[in-house]
Structures are given as C-alpha cells and as structure tokens.
Image (cartoon, rainbow, N blue to C red; front, side, top):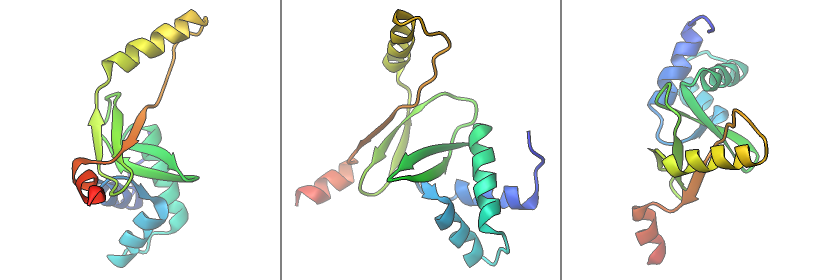
Amino acid sequence: MKRNTWQREAVREALGSSEGFVSAQALHSALRDTGSPIGLATVYRALADLAVEGEADSLQQEGESLYRACTPGSHHHHLICRNCGLTVEIEADAVEVWAKTVAAEHGFTQPNHIVDVFGYCAACSVALAK
C-alpha cells in the first residue's frame, strides 16, 4: 500500500465527488479549478494506484482510461450509459459461474474477468426516442 499523501487524498476526494467515469485529464482540470497545484502526472499515478488497490474502477473507452470511485473489496460489474455516463455497480452471479466453467473446460485456473455492459439508461433512452 502506498503512503497517503495530500495529492493522493485530493485525487481520491475528487474522484469520489465525480459522477460516473472520468479521465485523468478531466479530474486534473477539476482539481486545478479548485486551486490545487497538483500535476497531471501525479493524478495519473494516484488513479493507477487507487485502481490497483481496489478503490477505483477503470475502463478503456476509445483508447482512453477512465476511472470512478468504487466499493472497495467487492468484485462487481457495471452497467454504463453510452450517452450520459451513468454507471451502476451490479452483481452478476451467472457471469461468475460462466467464467469459472469456461476456464475449467479449457484447463485454466484462477480466472479473472472484467464485465462492463454498455447501453442507454432509462432517461437517455426516452430522450433518444424523441
């Protein structure tokens, strides 16, 4: 575990107050707008550390890493709105069983996986239908 610095705490707090997934650049910009002198490279490092330690989820979208604060210590999946970015943590027991079964069928052990389901939330679905 990395030591807790003011920079790391600032990134953790900013990430926790962000809606949905956010890029390091957007988070850096939000921090700078509040007067923080934190550097972009520091934001990248802090986000990567938080993701490794399970305090942040990350995903790749259009070649860019995006992050959001998550529930530490729980394996979960996401529903993510392609329009507004609304993100919902979901349990997916059927996916867990399937991943273990498929891995075992092919002689793999200790399988890990990431499942993110992209679609449109209810509000965006209504707006897009108009």
